Image (cartoon, rainbow, N blue to C red; front, top):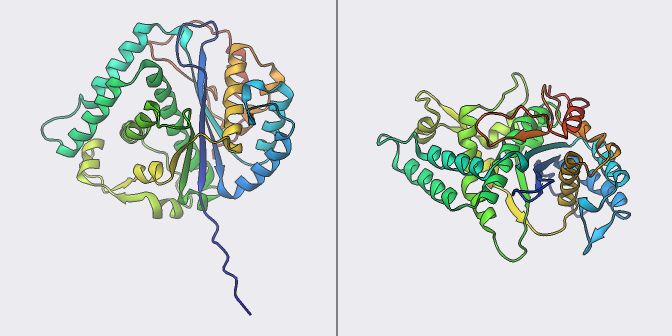
Length: 339
């Protein structure tokens, strides 16, 4: 009898990222958003199979489903399939109408300075080289791409915080690898945004997690995650974290770059995250009725604040009540329990 070799199951967490809006001002409906859909490998075939059944009846543009074309009923049908697949959705948004050109300029200048402000002659030369390279690229980045990157990195950091805690209790094997697929806008070239994303994501995320360390659930099965991503803290890491006694660290480079690609293909999963992110934006600007986003909170993590993270690049927070406050208040209940 001839033996048949069965391919091993890939234990992997898939993250699909897309944006909605222009990230520019002025504009009467100037909300922009970045969303991420997290799908464990063993849930992906089920999800894609269910989505294909719904997709047949969805409106398309050049063969691709676009979230802006869907009705409330059609969006609700897609969300209903996601609720059955144990996926997570994260989204960050910004209201450009509440920002002036000077607000953005000042925030960007602060970030440019902040990248290298803590460096001293005692820091490792490689750290100087890396951070000054990031600063140079940041200085050349347009305001539009800068704003988009701020939202994107915010979403990624929250994905890593929430997905690791949520799935280490449910599907710990899936945390052995992370696959990142980001929607690409140019089908022929790597855009400046994609180049900036690839260059800056590591140091910016490192900075975020050194300020607010990753959560760790005591007693959970991190064996698959640790086997791949736990590493020895180098002198370089100890300098970045200002912890001279650190012995262990998480290898963010492996998490973010082992399997990262920008895709211009109309893949089903990227269509789904486009539908979700666009639905949030449409709801906030008043172009989507309640039926379209009613159950969206069900695929998000419950927290003590709005599930839609609203970012402000202004000095100080605005006290004005935005016109989409009722939408934000709806996204305060119905989410998944993290623990």
